[in-house]
Length: 309
Figure 1 (cartoon, rainbow, N blue to C red):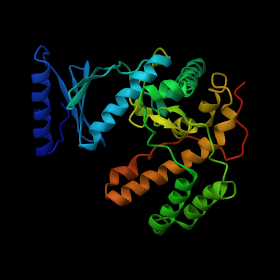
Figure 2: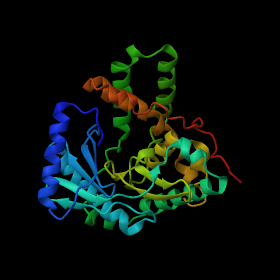
Figure 3: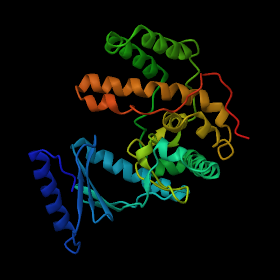
């Protein structure tokens, strides 16, 4: 088991295990790994085979059903395996663990060039398939708006919030960088316009499970921010994790990537600010640490999409 848990966490772990045993009496429990530091779920791995996710909050139950709808729809259209959820009443979720390792930028960069190309192709096709799901199908599946969706006015509100709540903690050069970033949309109120699509919303490294030996993605395990939103948001996450060269490799599988790359760059640059606001507002320092170690090289807005061949 994971130790270093508080007394309350240990008690909660045993409570969850009792719930699992009651729901699945045929399941023999040999090994347990418990993780209680997720923002929305407590997570238990049983026998390194089954994953159980328990919502931490009452409001997270609705999110659980929304994510289930996103997973079911995405599984019909995409080329990468996704978790097949079993929902036990409104209590928790069970699914088979997808074998592999987290695709950190460090592990990705250790791959051979042809393996890096293959993975970029997998994700490019994955996003092309997702972003072109017919709107009729999205509506029939009751897919909600993505948590990442922002109107133009909401982007301006973010800028104001950053000025009011974060500027006092930032250096002069940091404040200047924020001003330069948001000047892009202040000078062009059409910059953030887009055709809404079905998106994942949070393609970050620990949601991408890959085979480091075979050089391929085995699965994508989280759609908690999935829904209707700007397709550029999915590329923004990848830019922040893996950089421009990685994203440019996806162009062969995602037509018109060059048309949304600047929005993706803009959105990527706002993510650390959004998380920092969350940390300041909640007093939870873990929000401030989310983007530590992210070294994706993002080109300036207006730069042509890099060519890899």
